[in-house]
Image (cartoon, rainbow over all chains, first blue to last red; front, side, top):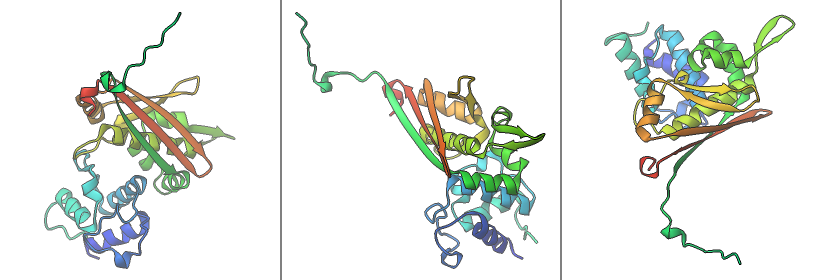
Length: 86
Length: 150
């Protein structure tokens, strides 16, 4: 499964959005879609578990978790370019 | 004879600046996080002092007062709103709720949270926590010189 599919599955389970996932595009603002600060913690922990890493303190910013696309970019930046997450 | 002198408020120089932050957290969501992520959730968000403060031992088993954990999470988020980070936000553990014996709480900052507080000129942070049923909330008031809190 591709990184993006994994991220979308985790967002669907942990972000507690007010909208169905099929309405969430790669650039949909997840906070605007209903994700709370506490839900973003669960999202962060689930992503760390799935991809076996820990978000460094410098990535603890709203923009890191603002969209599926942003999450993917930041995970790949930590794991290294070219990681396919499989 | 006592005379009251009224001074128009626009002639008074403000001597204290304030910022206020508030946050509301679902107790049920904190309970779900604790069940799902366990120690990882606690260790990422709360200091050892906070964890001990929320520990409850019943019949030899250690549990956690999830309403108290939720109130502390709300306090941390309320502090972040007061600190107004422009970019990287302080890690949750750098904002600590310290409960005193009499029951009232204060805030202790470290790391980036402390740095942001100093940069803003904040001299004092006051916090009030509450929880009832499914929700927990916290209000934080920061005070300091007016020119530094704009």
